[in-house]
Structure formats: structure tokens, C-alpha cells
Length: 248
Ligand code: SF4
Ligand code: SF4
Ligand code: SF4
Image 1 (tube, protein in one colour):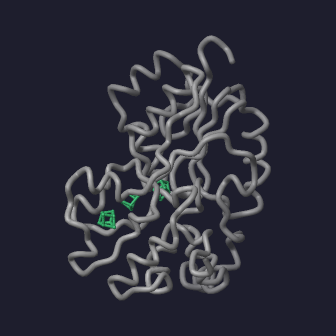
Image 2: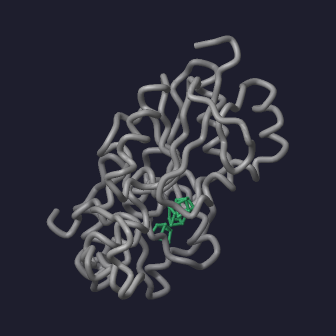
Image 3: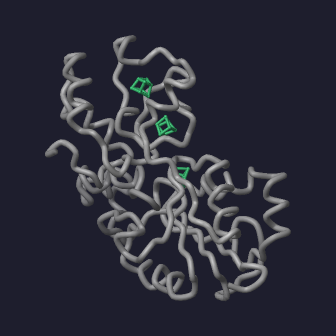
């Protein structure tokens, strides 16, 4: 890698909120800007270049005509990082897959649906090799900075691979199950400092699943409170439609 790594940001199907999170890093971003050359970042700069070392990709793959651009990014970059739930798991976009593509197009575009190209939603790593993932909807700024700093230092980024419940307990929250609600924190990847349960909201696992979720333990918790995995699937699918946990 060159002495000053060249960094790029690319967007596919997304709300672009994760790129905004990068811009929201403000003070830390100034430090990063001093250590790297940002050569492509449509939301922030006018320049465009195909000469980059680290490519951050936001957004899901949702149309075949994007494949060429996606493969081009992979070819140009030494390291590819998926940025946010849309890129890591398909995110909210996956709703389209299990609702039915034709039905979704009709609901959104009505009679004009035929004007728009679409295909089954896929996370980015289903189409190209991805080296690292920054999870979340949106990404936590701290995790993005950890990944950038690690890559600049030549070490592997530390991404949590334990459940949100761990962070939730450390924050001494009363578990939502004890308040008559359900929550996916038992199998969701930590790293957000239990954002949602800390403010009274349920965890929808926007950061995806931990790599080895204890499904049996999760089922036990749900059973204890009179619920089944199937009952929580609709909301769990909101961010994780690519996983078919109902069959597990
Ligand atoms: S992960 Fe969420 S915030 Fe990020 S681009 Fe997708 S929808 Fe927007
Ligand atoms: S509220 Fe959710 S994240 Fe917190 S302990 Fe309960 S299940 Fe886990
Ligand atoms: S608590 Fe769950 S839904 Fe909320 S930010 Fe964390 S992983 Fe995402």
C-alpha cells in the first residue's frame, strides 16, 4: 500500500445514511483526512478516481446493471469494506425479496413499475469478495473509526462477535422481556452499546447476527415468555431477511 493510503466511498442501493455517519465523524474525520487521500466520495468531494487502496461500499445489490460497477470497485481496491446493514446483509431492502419483487414494484411504482430495473436483493459479499464489514443501520461512528485506524495500522479490526445483551447488561438496563416485549439482542451482534434497548426500543438486529448464535438458548428465552422464533420472524426479517432463522 502507498505511504498515504487512497480511500474511496461508493454507494449502491441505500439511503446514504452511513456515508452521512462518516461525515458526522467531524473532528476524527479531520485526523483521518490527514492520514489518507480520499479520492472518491460523491457525497463530499467532486474528484473521481479509480486509483484507490481501500474501498468502502455502502448499499445493497438490487439490480444486475450494478454488477459491472461493483466488480470494477473490487478490481481497483486492495481492501473492500462493506459499510452498513444494506451492504452487509441487504438491510431493509431485503423486504422486497420475501414480499415478492413484482408485488413490491407494484406497490412502489404502480403502473410505471415496468420502467424500473430491479432484481433479488443481495448483500455485497454475495456478489464480490468483501474483506471487512462495518455493521449497523446506521453504522456506529466509533466502529467506522476503529476499522479505518486498524487498516492504517495494518492490523485486523476488532469487530464485536457477541450479543447485544452483553452491552445491555453492562448498561444495567431492565430486559425488555421483563416488560412484556421481545427483543433480538440475544442473537444480534453487539457494537452499538445496546442503543435501542437503552432508550426503550427493541433490538431488531440491524447489526446482523453473531457468527455463532446460540439459537437453542434464544428459543429457550422466547419459550419462557410464551413466544416462538416464528412469531418474531416478521420483525427480525426487517434487517435480516437473508437469514432463514425460522428453519433453524
Ligand atoms: S444501513 Fe441504514 S443508514 Fe446505512 S445506508 Fe442502509 S438504510 Fe441507510
Ligand atoms: S432488552 Fe434485549 S438486549 Fe437487553 S438484555 Fe433483554 S434481550 Fe438482551
Ligand atoms: S440495539 Fe439492535 S437494532 Fe438497535 S442499533 Fe443495536 S443492533 Fe441495531
